[in-house]
Amino acid sequence: MKQPRSAEAEIQIHVVDRQEDCPGWTNWDALTAFLHESLKPYEDTPADIRRGIADAFEERDGHRGFVLIAEVRERPAGVLVMLRTGMRGYVPENLLLFLAVAPHVRGRRIGQRLVRRALELTDGSVKLHVEHDNPAKQLYEHLGFQSKYADMRYVR
Image 1 (spheres, rainbow, N blue to C red):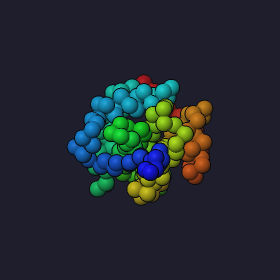
Image 2 (cartoon, helix red, strand yellow):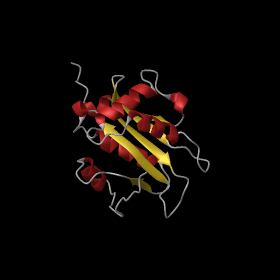
Image 3 (cartoon, rainbow, N blue to C red):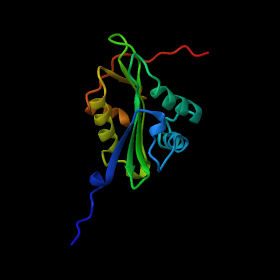
């Protein structure tokens, strides 16, 4: 008798480090919409998300960022966008820009798997921004992220 596949076994993580290498079953517009919807209520505008994805593929100091896509049956279950800052020390080398998991598959450790894979692929420190009331803050703390500064901005 055939054993049912576990949720862990059916998740495939794609590493995309060039914009033209998006998996054939999706596209950047669909992934932008996925991030916009799945990040709620902490979402950015689709235009800002799209710009962030494009920035991940820009070469800085000889390196590019990347996008990780967790796939379940040719559908995105989670997406992570990592930027390379081109800096060292006082500004971390990497910025985890977006991490989202589809609401219907939360609790399966997809976010944790994406972050762990991203950390394996990066050299140097990783910085991220997370709202104090965002449940994802617990995930980041569990994985070893620490609060270092208050995020302050002057916006025009």
